[in-house]
Each structure stands twice: as C-alpha cells, then as structure tokens.
Image 1: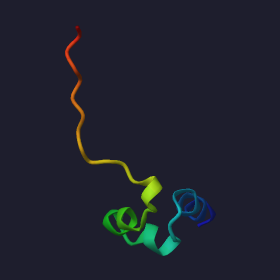
Image 2: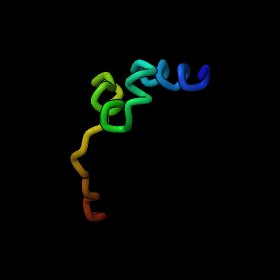
Image 3: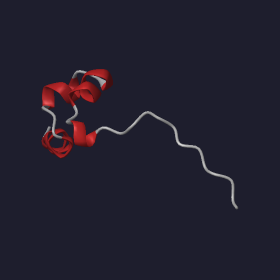
Image 4: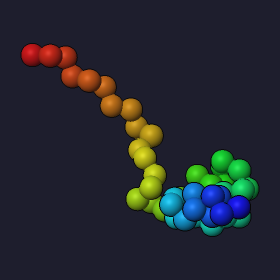
Length: 46
C-alpha cells in the first residue's frame, strides 16, 4: 500500500481515487497534470 500512496501523492490525487479506476483517477487529476487531447500535426519541411 505504501507504493500506491506514493503514486497517488505523485499525481496529486487520493489513494481512494487511484483505486477507484482509471476514469475516476483521470478526472481527479489537478489541471497542471492533465495533457491536452488536441493533436498537433507536423508542418511540412520548408
């Protein structure tokens, strides 16, 4: 359980949120831990 506590603390969520599943854990992430879902496309080389 100590490892799970450390993982939850690293991501800024509670242990219960971590153990409740991926969807709950992702929704509980602080905004600075979330990534954008927008895809970026590479520009053609000039």
